[in-house]
Length: 212
Image (cartoon, rainbow, N blue to C red; front, side, top):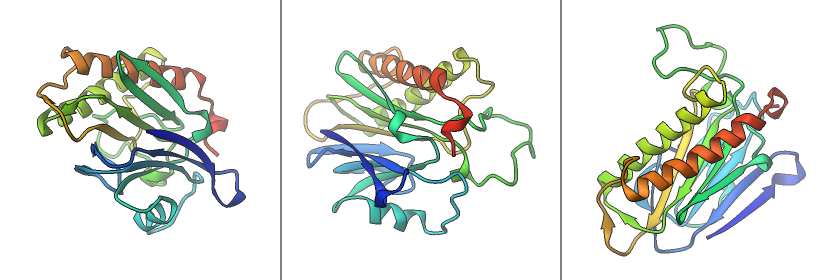
């Protein structure tokens, strides 16, 4: 798996591209390549805060390499990505917290002027070295989300995330499948610690100027 930082079209906006190649299965909440399936790459592309394109999926396809992949958008500065590892699990987070929100907010509390992809987003990519069942992958996404929320609260932010956060968890396609992905399972615990470390470091370093 190779991670590359790219600058698009000579502009100040960049993107992170993970090239996994064949033999990987992923679960993601991203607009492009979301759900569970075989994927070969992950793209985390930075856009301006006022991003207003009505074809984000087509935009991501144009930015990504050939083949099946996962594509995310963020207004956070992706060149300030934070990586962390724990026991063979790798996590990478791009953290933008211009509008942190509580998941269970009162009805009508969201800013109607902010489309989801305009918000400074927390995007997380995690890689585990073990295969997982579908249920364990879903559980892993829960673990990532819980660890992210814990990190944000510990860093002093009044929220569990933003309205547009995305996640991708990648595991090998072949091999014995782990059936648990929760935070007290062997691999879920490592996943939680790696994500928590990456998000907390990113949250503590984030400043409003990071979301242009």
